[in-house]
Length: 428
Image (cartoon, rainbow, N blue to C red):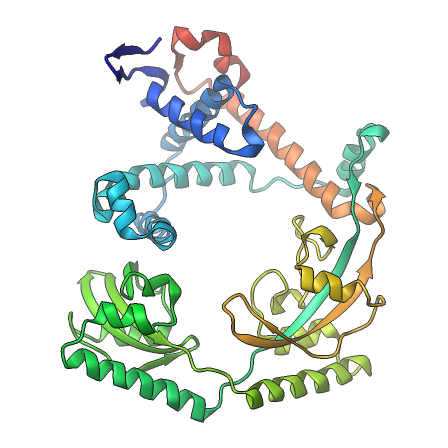
């Protein structure tokens, strides 16, 4: 049992896996984190310990098999996570909470990030070639007791084509001039950070005075990076146009292939006429689709400005379900889309509709309802992709268990007597 002196716990090793250890403090922290997850409140400390031992086993076997991750990948992941933390809580709040600078925190996190990436790489290496045949999917489904089959709510196959208004040259000139005025104010002695907080249209960086932190080359749009890397630290750019708008950039520091900068972004506003042109374009495209001149999927791939996975052009405009298929539960749809398609007939396409995107900018879209299912008990005909995914996951789990059995023969595992009742060594 962990010993206490006053209010201070004396840490101890609760598991050894070759050269890797699990400390009592690691176990307690992981257990608290698991219990904070609403889906894992019933997890036991033994189960958490087993998860930690499995991670160490993967690390130990990766060392034996020479599985590594490149330093550049570690740094990229580290920077992304830190930027996410800063974006959500603010650099000052983070430093006050931990009593350390962001750079000191990154230094502490580096080894943990590397271990997480190595564990992920090992898991991919073990299961990357696993497949299931149609016969295996049927066998898996037929083994499920009839009274245990899942019940699925109504699902739809719905797609969209999105058109962003093309900002006119005159609107762009207004934004460029606004940024030139801000640049002049900075050159005359006003504070960059203060002006960024007041005027920048990039909410992620504006609250930090426009600072973007250290990034690797290739993380920002080419126009931004090309301008930043031509500059000397402390130098201000002219307005630089990218797909996001106009940037005023100041290079802060360079460290080899990494650099730190800050910017003020001004986004040109679409005029009513710009939106009207987008409506007219989609109305014409809708006519071509309805007269079979082009399919909706082909039109989406060629013309939609929505590039994300859910409803993205690369997927023919279709929203993707959790199982990777084009069928989405109506419960998971955006309410506006749900109420729109609820009154549509299967096979129909809406007229162009103006809506606001997540960033508040106007856009125009048309929606296509390809199919709609009724709530039903799972069956192979309607739910093959879901059943396939479940069968694949079961096969991966079995293969991982076999792999752990073989790996244990090559790796030394020792569990503290306090946790011998957990039977961790026998359950892996």
